[in-house]
Structures are given as C-alpha cells and as structure tokens.
Image (cartoon, rainbow, N blue to C red; front, top):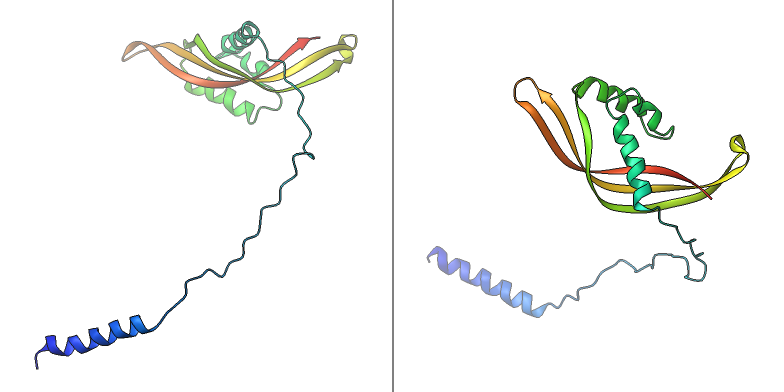
Length: 165
C-alpha cells in the first residue's frame, strides 16, 4: 500500500462523520438593552445667543497681541491648565522678535453661556460666553540662518467673552 491509500480511508471517515453529526450554532450571551433616559425626562437646553463675529475677532486680536509678551499671562484664564508652563514655553522657545498675525477666522461657535452679576461694578449684569474660534494665523520672525520666516497654521482658540446685558 502506498501512503496515499492509507490517507483515503481517514478522509472518507472524516467526511462521513461530518455529515452524520448535526451541530446547532448559537450564542450563549443574553441581550441586555442599554438603559437610557426617556425623551420626556430630558430637559430642553436654553438657547445660546451667538457672540458676533466682530466681537470675537476683537477678543482674539487682543490675545494674539499679547503673545510673546509678558502680558500673555494676564490674558490666560485662571482656569487655563498649566498657564505658567505655556507662558514659560513661549518665553524660552519662541524667538524674541516673533509676532503672530491673524490672517482670517474660519469658524466661530458659542459653546456655553451664563449670566453673572458683578458686585465690583455696581451689580452690572454680564453674559459670559465660551466661544471656540478656528483661525488661520501666521508667525513671523527673522531666522539667523534662513532669513525672514513666515509660518502659517490653523489653530483653535477657546475664548471667554464677557458682554454687558
């Protein structure tokens, strides 16, 4: 007998075994729906009043004017994560003569608003808005090796805008 002949009965027995045995396929996990609030239980959020584009542009220009100056620390919020580290990085990495210029604003989105009363200003009421601004900017500086450099980029800035009511 050749080795091929010995293999044939084994293959034939395997095929007969597969045909003769039926194995139902199934899954043992149960389906549990994800709990969610009903639509009636969800409160409608109050409408946001979009901050006008000129107001946002003015605020962004103030922040960009403070970039690469000691006034940058004043412009960063007390809630800004690691503000000192950002200011120190700008002081140590950015060339002294570098400036940043606003080329254009692509998008303005108001994310959050609240109304506050300022007791220091005679109980004046303000609307404080958190606004995201996608802006195209350009950093300009003189490089000793490559000469005048312009570095363009698109960045997203989050601004807190305070408007009197």
